[in-house]
Length: 255
Image (cartoon, rainbow, N blue to C red; front, side, top):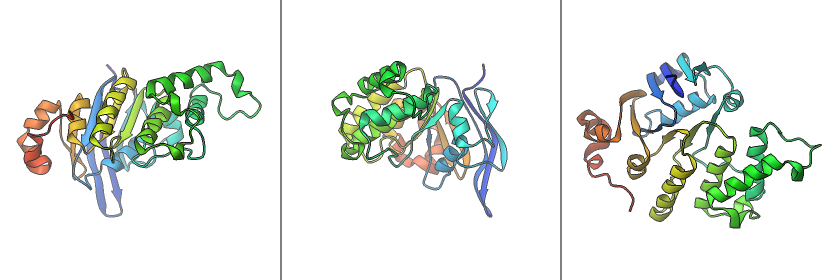
């Protein structure tokens, strides 16, 4: 079976500094995989390589069996890979509804067509309404993105990512900066709205990782030290010594 996302021997250097050193990773369709590792391990660089923001010097990256390394980010996006960012990336002066509809318009092939009446685009409007319901943001439909709470902005950004209708989603620290109650809600939201999609995320909160991920990839010094189920990663003494220390055995789910 062809993997949704496949990396083979991927390398990335910045000058004399090797940041990614021969990463091999395979994510199957509908799997949820978390990438963890200490600061400076290369997690963000790896996301940049997969999404096309950066290009590897060596190696191969495939999306559903099609090679994507060397392609620009917009081309990869159109092939079915969407990414959210660590820092909220929204149209601040546009409403919740408008932010979602912009994403939906592109996914349905409308683009920003000035000669078409938005009110007549039934498919786009129905898809936008559906996203509003899924995100629980219907009551905020007319609110400007800049006026939302931080957690609401993160939910809207997730919706914009989903609006592309991509099958593979990259989420960069989706719960960063949230309170425990907000994180609990966001875990449930991610689980609900990404059902059936392939998910690759970078996340520092081990409670989130162990609750959401089917597999965990441990990245240390630009290399995948371990890639396995949460239970096996938790029990891996090499991983504990190199990164997680004693706290992995005590990692608990958010209550």
